[in-house]
Length: 324
Image (cartoon, rainbow, N blue to C red):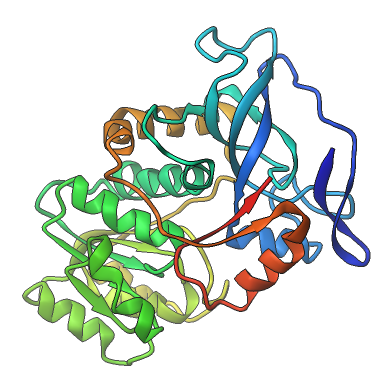
């Protein structure tokens, strides 16, 4: 099969053996794969959890048809089903997924490309906002890095779960202007030093109840300043740096819960439970087309290096997808 793999000379699309499913795995004929920021690190030769190194097939999410199931896969997953899933090695014609991350593509007219944009964003943001952020109806939320695909999904989920005020951040004026389309009541520019005061003003001086932070270092102290007393900050990503200043006194004074999350250190059972909770809360909205992401550009699998370069240039809005 064809797959985009990491080599000593960069990412190349080459012929590799087709994978075989283990007892609890599903083999999927991939029709489309979504790109994620973590793919850039893997493409550069860095590790991402158990992934990484020369010979690695890139990709974390994909959609396609079930070809084969392992002996211990639940009976509701059958050959021929149209599915979307999370799993390693998605930039390929065939990929494996644990059965607990596999979801049926809605019977509506959802395309393969649209389906491939959803698995990471849905599970990441439901876990951050609902499970770890404990957002309740009527509470306020700030999504840092809101113009990313995961961020756009986060604002939609927050609105659907009853948030009274959704704030999204982006330093790009064009993208910031579009955040309202995806649920933002206020869009802020964290390149403006006064952004924490804007958040405090919008919340009547109280601060937001929940912050989902995909940026980290460059906004960490600003988050502490504009988070409500007894608020929650959920650290999802570190696009603004992995190390930086942190005002421990402000953190203590506001009695903030600071929660770090990543899928890299979660067990198979934990990931399955995250997926189960996400489906229970969000799947009717997914089936109704109420939770969706814009597609910036679709590349053929053969042009996977160009797709990664497009993401690296950071000029896109929404998801980049490979058609496999």
